Image (cartoon, rainbow, N blue to C red; front, side):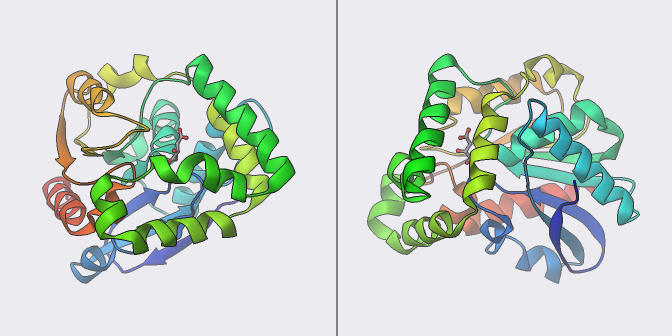
Length: 251
Ligand code: MLT
């Protein structure tokens, strides 16, 4: 599998992996400052195969991308599903990480309820396309403050959801439902790690953020007020400060 990607700027490399069901566009508010300060930002579009080890395969495709770009080590981060891929990549290739960024994500595998939700959503997408993703997910993704004061962000995410690739969404849902549990690797992570969560994230909540902070030795947690699951979009200025501080510490 070969991943499509965008590459912006020159300098020390930072990879950012997007969440479901979006693509690399979701980082559009987060990269300008990094590029201006001479970092290189690489934004892959994650793709999934229809098999039972798909997130590992996506992580291997990412390792191949680093190799094809002749990058030995990078700061690698992901939001939600992007974070699930980071855990797979760290298990398979820890040597590729100069630093790790975990945003609104979890190291645990799915509960039975969450797996059932995903397979139910796959059925609905097969019948009604991406409108089913919007109906099942959109309302839970944002803080109240975003919904009331920044509805354009909600509308933008909705239009990205509707434009996203239906068959990749179905494969991504299967891949997330079947993903490995990575709780056991948390205490082996020995690189600088930044954890960023929206204070009102309902998909991956602050208990999860606290678990990651407690179990990953060299980690720091920032909680972004008035943000839900897409903290990088909902409060991009605060998110960008956290990101920038961290990359400056690592590099
Ligand atoms: C995401 O934002 O990537 C998804 O909400 C992740 C998930 O459904 O577990």
